[in-house]
Length: 90
Image 1 (tube, one colour):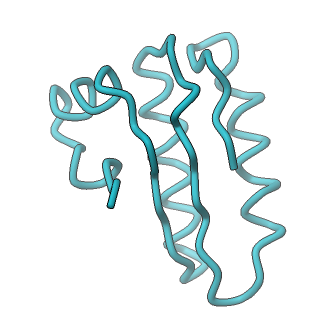
Image 2 (tube, helix red, strand yellow):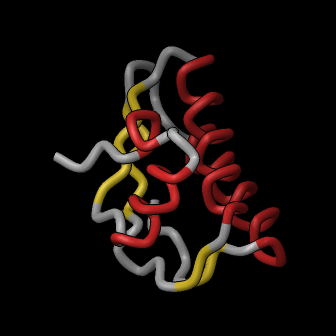
């Protein structure tokens, strides 16, 4: 799933719903791959949306991959101490 270029409070619900749809379409044993390469404008809502998506993925026993995280997202995750939960670029 491709994240939008903006993930802030006004767009958080829409993005969260899109992630939930992508998750529901995954087969058993699948991995939700979230591509953050387009993400240019973000705030702490981005962390909340991604952490919730990751929680839902884990609750279903599926895999999680966050790819192409922009430096701003990595810095924000580090500031809040959640980088190990979100930043999974390989």
